[in-house]
Image (cartoon, rainbow, N blue to C red):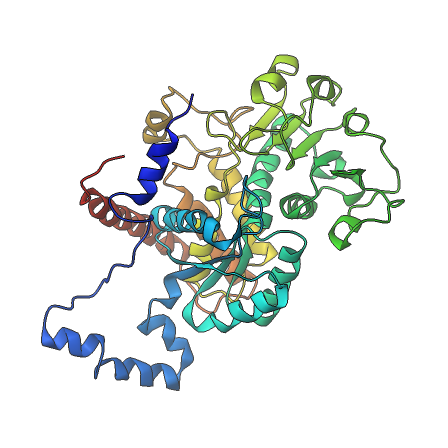
Length: 439
């Protein structure tokens, strides 16, 4: 049943204010003295200090808590290549999530640019403005090139969430699913439906968690990716297997894990029946998964099943990752978001799923209990402890791996995060409440 009508969605985006975000000053500007300090002549003091030491831009401007959500609208989730103007509502929405869940400010940057090198040149030129870059909804294979080039050329975190977000969240689910099923990452056979940015990134991330590349069977729209094919790009060639499967159904026989990042209906109940014991199934096509939770459970009650949907257990939702990953990276002034930080985020999510679920989460989902097990291997997006677990783990990993320019005491930092989020949510709630129209 739909939660809203199309007109209600349009009203939400247009009334009473246009769009979903706006810039609000955080310093007073009510007196002549305020005005003189905010702009001329007082602003010159901050300018001269930063000119002498560029690192002071993180003290005298909002740069250290400002992320650019950058897109050219060529691969908007569920909508495809709709362009930067039509994609802007999505990028604004990403800004809302950054702010609400982790108190990170965002400017959405929607670029009418398809040439990868030109896009990189524009984004790199914006480095003095931002503390981090979140690349979003840029089509493959250009997205791989763009992220790698910017990571090499910029000295602030660059993170393509479409690639890494799903990898980190589903990776947390995989860690716990393997524990529950009594399997080891290095022993499982994984079948992947889809070979785009998210699928290849997830598969590489699972390698970091111990899955063997030779045990990953990946399928694109033309079938199994094997070494006999001559139509593969660099990312697909990485996963080309020596053995060729004739079909997805053949590959699924005896498989331990299925990852779907393709389209609805790719998997049948017979395929699920043919999988090994305690199969792990992450069917992430949106809004309709490759196979539904109910269809899987009807034939394999022992399956550990996750989708991208909020109306079924184990939702693989990127909001569990990106706000908190950037929060941790920004707070230690990290130069990048490296593999150590991503793996730390995944393990933090897995650890949180083992904690007792607070009553406010149960109330939000209208259930009496949520306990670590087959139907709860990933925390819910409404768990307010996420910022402490994930941001704390990311900050620690940044320090441990040598990419943090600042250091924090993790125990104190977690307490500060909790207070920061409470204060931010109070401000945001009060501000939104000032609008008359309720949604």
